[in-house]
Figure 1 (cartoon, one colour):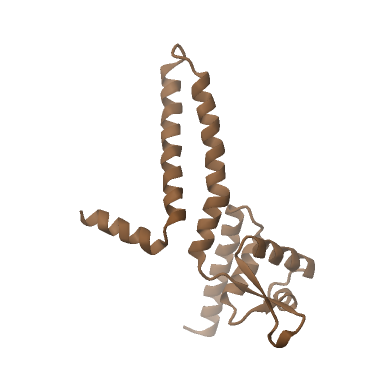
Figure 2 (cartoon, one colour; figure 1 turned 90 degrees about the horizontal axis):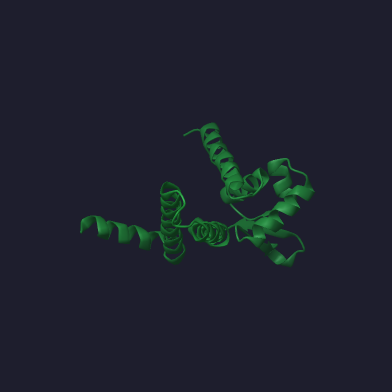
Amino acid sequence: MSSDEMTDARERVIESMEQSAEVYGLSRSSGRIYGVLYFADEPLSIPELVDATGYAKSTVSNVTRTLTRIGLVHRRSSEGGGRRVQFEPEREVWFTIQDVFQQYIHREMQATLRTIHRAEDQLSAEDNPHERERVRELRETYEDLREIVQLATEFSAAELREALETYERS
């Protein structure tokens, strides 16, 4: 693969990371900065990230702070004890996804389930049976999803894969 082809492939992946960042409630710039760090051979400083992304220093600073807080990026002191801080990505993405499941998806599902339970409590036996059935089906779906998210946050990807393979063989 030529150098240009590798650059194009890397850029496509980084663009995908930008889109994924938005899905998880982060800015596109968060996805790009994470992607640049992910493909970097060594930790990068804020000025280096400014050069690599073209973003303003304030944007890079705010994004690296956010990414550090959520565990996608780690702050490191410069080699030799310099004052310049450098950033490196969390490369074990599965742990990050588990954290997102725990922090955002689980919380959102719990809120939705509380609302569904209130709706079920408000529906009386005389209410439209089709409506009650739809609400019940929705509750069961969310309960199943909650269980899937719980499993995804408790086990590694390898453990989940092994369990599924064992299940398929039986």
